[in-house]
Length: 368
Image 1 (cartoon, rainbow, N blue to C red):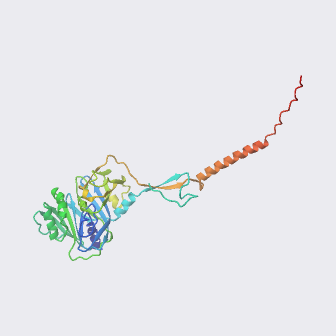
Image 2 (image 1 turned 180 degrees about the horizontal axis):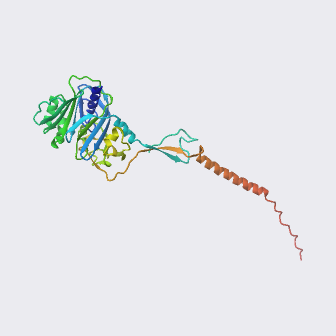
Image 3 (image 1 turned 90 degrees about the vertical axis):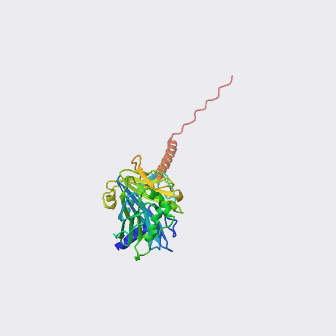
């Protein structure tokens, strides 16, 4: 069971950033995946959490996938040497609860569609020994992680890195060489993963266990550069845990990111409480990339100008009532009753008023 879970996790992560591969793949912000020949894999949802405490960065990713692939290879650039382990799936359940909209009731006086006497109601919502390395490639470590073969690499030449990957069972596409050049120039390292030889698993489907990466970082960064090779519009959903509210330095070629939530984590329990210790401020960002080719780099994050909270609110519009009776009906009815009473009072008063006799008629004055 544990081996199968690990298999699910890392293979899924391979669905990241290369919509240009020989089989359809979903491009996201964290790596690159290639399924085996004549196989397909698609990532229908990606959730990522980035935690930064000023010295160290952690990224926890969970993918929901569909397809028939049992074999895949994946590579992810990281700015410093990384460790990799399985994450806790409960983290994302707690995050969903933390950023859930608050529900508030908004009252209105006059009836609307859904109020009596109109229609229905509605809601309104505002390790194995490493093999010899090729020139230009350094093998930091090679290990068997469940059913996966994991290699941690350094490289001074993107072509040599690609050759090493292919020679050791990581069949990544030729265009990866060009895409990796900026990372090689900046002396980043790489985590490459593949299904170990002789392992057979079931096709990757559904929500997969998270993968948890940890590495040193003097500033928070979320890898996005490889997504520029995607051929379809891309989207990013990212939770950021830090000491303060965070924002991206730029849009890196996409639409301006939206802040869905900003506020302090309200729990010290469970996976979220553990991860948020020392980094209690949560910022939830979303962004779309209509033209992935315009992606100009990785997302760098910085502290926002203020820790202004953002909380989504869903309003439920309700007709104001008094003792179960619509207030408008009471008001209108009361006004009509008052008007009728006033008219009746006037009529009664006029009926009771005594009749005033007409003034006497004086006889005509005599002539002459």
